Image (tube, rainbow, N blue to C red):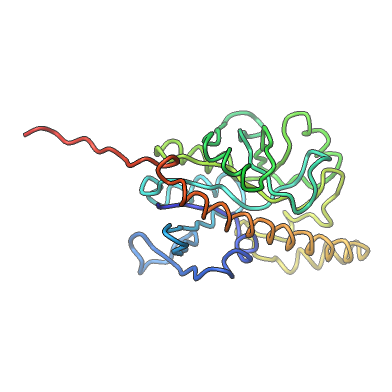
Length: 260
């Protein structure tokens, strides 16, 4: 079983990667530095490829074009998300039936069997995960979106759409980092680049203008780490379950053979 898992940035991936011997991996042109980080790990009977897409839809679409997605049996779009539903708390893991962009220009659906298996192994089912081009950072903005979806993130629609175009079954799974009624402590668009690297000047400016945000930033860091652990725990259970159900989830691919 070949499983592709995507995360936006290393911070989302780090807790799970610390449990498994994930090594840098290239499909081809390994001597040339890749724009998007790629890792491989053997977990039980499954070969897992991890692609770090960077933040946002444009990066996610480019990242999916940079690898042969079609060699995989299953694609899991993973990472952290903000809650739009007051019933979802930081640390909860959710599986989304449908993912769509805010402008509704792109939509994709999780494979039904993968979705059901995710729920069986601890993910909370949600109908819609919204993919935003910008970080949704205030409780007010989340409230405005709450009638359209249960969570908001920035990559899943593009990941699952690209997988579907290559004939690969996919599922969107996310861990909640911030509650629906919670403002983010800083404008992360100003302090992180597209690959999640800290822009020190932006951080100093944000904190300098509002020193009271420092405890809030520390608290958010704790929530994010806890969400990362919840996601890592879930992925360990889920990948094992996928391996156990491989025949049902990913039947052998049939290749056409021309008669001679």
